Length: 294
Image (spheres, rainbow, N blue to C red):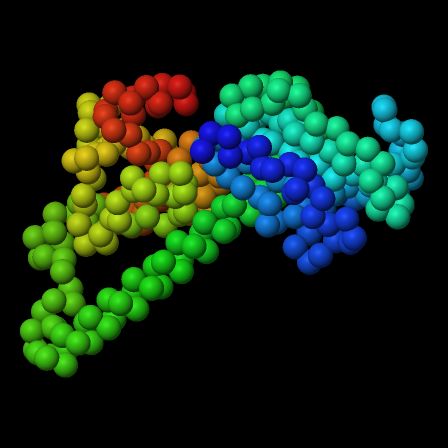
C-alpha cells in the first residue's frame, strides 16, 4: 500500500503517444504553456495525491540532456498534503510529432522521502494542477456519497411501503421517530453529516441517524465528541453552510479528515453547520491532533 504512488511509471507515461483523449482536461494556461491533466490518473491515498499531466509549449524549449527542442512533456507528479510540497516522479519529452526525445526520473524517490520536493505555492502552474485535483477528488467523493444515500433511501422507501401494505395504521406511528420529550428538550436531536468524509476514514465512520444524537461531549473543553467508540474534535461552527464547506476544504488540503455535522439548535436560530475532524481511537489522540492544528 505504501508504495502506491510509484504507479508503474514507464507504462503510465507511454499510454497516449498518439493524441489526447476526452479524459484530458485543460487546467492551466500560463506563459505559453497549456497543461492538461488525465482525470483517470488522479489518485488519493493517505496524505498524497498523484496525477499524470501533459504540457504543450507554444514555442519549443530546450532542456538539459535533451539534444532537440521539446514541443511537449508528460509528467507524473506527486503531491504531499501535510507539507504542501510536490515532486516530479518522471517526465517524457516529445517533439512536435509526439516522438519521444528523452526521459527523466527522480532517483530514489519513495513514499517516505522528500527528495527534490518543492513548495506547491512556488509554481503557479503546479498550484493550478493541485487545486484541480483537490476539487476533482472532493466532487467524486461527494457524488459517491450521494449515490450511496439514494440507494439507502430507496431501500428505506421500499421497506416502509412493505410495512404500509401489511399494517397501514401502525406505520403512521413509526414515520416520526422523534419523541415528544426530545421536541421539548431543545437539544441537538437532528444531526446529520452533510459533507463528504475522507475516503481514508470511511471504514471507521458511522452513519449518524437524523433522529438521535449519538455523539456526546467527551471533555471539559466542550470540543471533543464521542459516540462511545470513536472520537472527533470540533474546529468551528457556522450559520452559513458555504463558509463551513470552505473550512472543510482547507482542512482536507492540509491532510485532515474533516467533515460537516448539521445540527438543529432551536434556541440559537435553527440550523448550524459544525466543522469537525475525526475519527480517533482515543480522546488523547483527538486532543493531540487538535493541538497540532492550533
